[in-house]
Amino acid sequence: MIPLWRRALLRLFRVRVRYTRNVTRALATRPVILTCNHLSMLDGTLVALASPRPLVFAVNVNHAQRHPVTSRVLGGLVALGLGRIVAVDSTRPVAARALLQALNRGESVMVFPEGRISPDGQPLEPMPGVAWLAKRAAVPVLSLRLRGAHRSRWFGKAGSEAWPRIWLRF
Figure 1 (cartoon, rainbow, N blue to C red):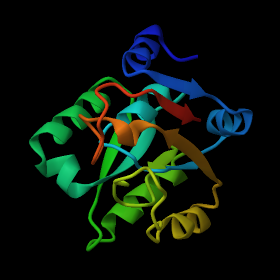
Figure 2 (cartoon, helix red, strand yellow; figure 1 turned 60 degrees about the vertical axis):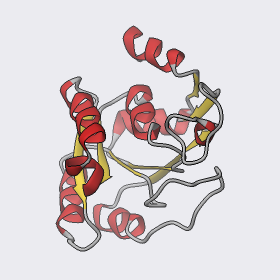
Figure 3 (tube, rainbow, N blue to C red; figure 1 turned 180 degrees about the vertical axis):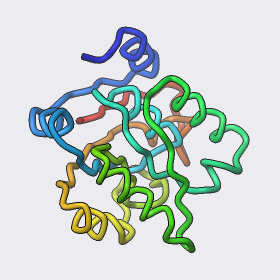
Figure 4 (tube, helix red, strand yellow; figure 1 turned 45 degrees about the horizontal axis):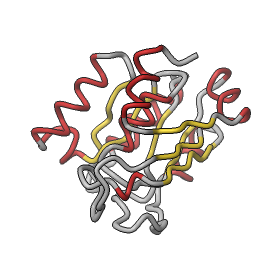
């Protein structure tokens, strides 16, 4: 069950979450890799708020450590117990090992395999890495799906709506 304060924040952002039995059951029983399409700067926060358990988020090093706003938001998510962050730098494989270690410890990992935000809400070509991680850790890969977040004027790349309705299939 998601705590009331998290449900209130999701409602504030006009997010409708639909939980599927296979994802929630897998999250409750074993480590998994969750993947999701990437539509806006808000996506990781929405997934963290909706997740029934804390996740390890793979986040681009520029956003995780260098960007003044996103690094603070991510730090807040960690402080609230919604998960932890692994800074990913495509030129250094240490992050992949850190994600593998998290899975081996029984933690679940959240990855946006596209590696960047879609400007128009259409799926982008996934970056390599998720299949390698799943094979090495011998864990399932489960897909989440976001809709509508790309229309956000504040968080999307080319959005025009102040508070668009957002759907998250978990």
